Length: 319
Image (cartoon, rainbow, N blue to C red; front, side, top):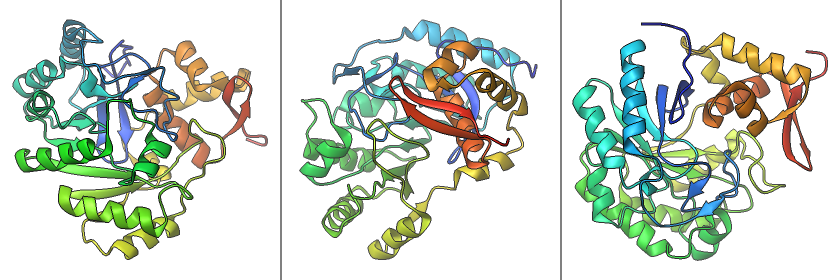
């Protein structure tokens, strides 16, 4: 075993996750291939909006990287399918899930997905061996769904929701469903009533309220306050709803890498950088970088400024 970080092409981390501890990420698609173009996505705007499933990343390459990682590193808390886009778009995801459950049965597998393909039996079967599925549902109205998620043309709201209902009936693991709250978008009574109705039908083990850590793909949207999120819990009156832990709590994790934080600080101290700039310079996955940037912003060490080329990270004056 070694503590020296290794840079891979398709796996990243482990990174501190608010829901899964130290999570090793598996990225099944190139940047940014997705079935939605959500206004809050911290990875950025979708560059290929599609519902076509195919082997976007060869399974063999991912398997080789996982085998190398397992030879050199200790087990993470979770292995999570996440990354640049929608992991179930990769038609080989089932092969990777099967490999992980055979080679590392002691490490739980999670799938972070928007859930848009749960209506397809092939997709449900491919991820059925996972331990935790983390889908999302941000709106149960046609207007809100299109305004927030901007889905591919072939993805309809009802088909999307019915797929989740069907998957819940078949899946014996845990389902932690995320609702991303954006004030002014999906926090009014009509939106919340429609969401509650469908959440009661889907029956997830947990409903997890989330909100922005940093600016999304559309200028002007803001994060919900803790009080606003708590008021939604009170309004729904459902026992299984929780607020995902505040970002600053991640710094308490024993596996938080101070060396990664230091190299990020050194880089943006030389010149302000976008998320993509940092990814190219440091060779780190954007999801991994985001976890540390969250912490640096929350601690007041880093600030952001939106310019023509995007959102730039820089050292906060006085730090």
